Amino acid sequence: MSQSELQKVAAAAWRIRRYALRMGEVQGQGYIGQALGIADVLATAFSHTMNFRPEEPEWEGRDRFLLSHGHYAIAYYAALIEAGIILESELETYGSDDSRLPMSGMATYTPGMEISGGSLGQGLSIAVGMALGLKQKQSSALVINSMSDGELDEGSTWEAAMSAAHYQLANLINLIDVNRQQADGNSQNILGYEPLQDKWSAFGWYVQRVDGNDLKQVIAAFDKAKNHQAAVPRVIICDTLMGKGVPFLEERDKNHFIRVDADEWQKALAVLDTQPQGVA
Ligand SMILES: Cc1ncc(C[n+]2csc(CCOP(=O)(O)OP(=O)(O)O)c2C)c(N)n1
Ligand SMILES: [Mg+2]
Image 1 (cartoon, rainbow, N blue to C red):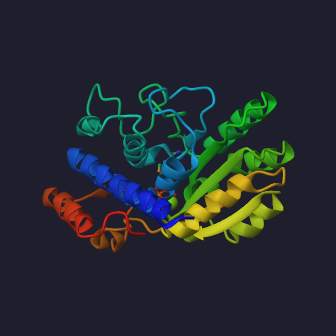
Image 2: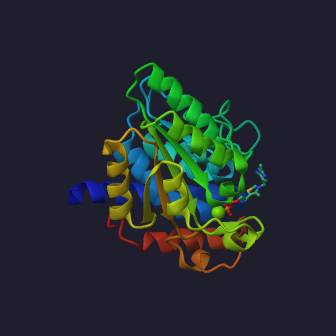
Image 3: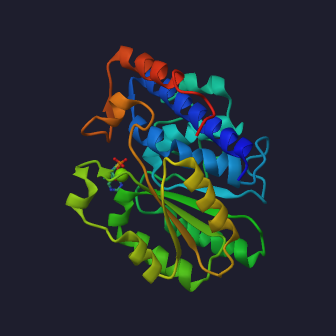
């Protein structure tokens, strides 16, 4: 990839982190660790890979992005702002009554939100149905499902994984945000899921595993997933760091749901502002 493309995506990731922190400040709380962790992956999806029309979010030919982990909505709204699907000014309404940006993702509230994903473990099944429908219509649109590592604990995920391979869904990319945390603590201690590459491979998927905060790796993996020739579904396992980009948030022990002191949001934004925008 060119240096200018890399810088473009890096600048998008930086802005996504900034929008998410500003929304966190509006409510004084939120799933901000996840947003900072997944920003590079979202920036790659929306600024590099996906085909969509910002002014026409329901355009039939669009690539679909499914936010299976609905509690990551703050991250996704930031990506939708970056994509030009919602206005930056709207972030001031985040989480308030009458807002189009509720704290958990709701398809009926927000343009560009394809599903209401808060009940974890459902997104991949929906993605399989969508990808199968698009394939039957001979559409060239991609379906990208984004799921969290906690969703690996759900049986429905594995049923969907098996179905995707059975139906040879080459138009399906599954992203797994492996931040190694869940609501109750460390994922491996709750229900061990490794070795993940071997599992997805055994289920018939084209598997890549990357450092989800290394933009070069993430962009290359999206390119390979899109261009891979075999008629199999694709998974990108993304190892990410919760709070990435703001050291005092990276270091927190339990990062699932963050309440920080009022002044810490500004401190976090100030830390981000010291980082060169657009440099990966
Ligand atoms: C089916 C279902 N079970 C339980 C929950 C409650 N819940 C909300 S977030 C969460 C943690 C899931 O793990 P993960 O998404 O990896 O957590 P994170 O990385 O965001 O800390 C749980 C159990 C839910 N939303 N849906
Ligand atoms: Mg997790």
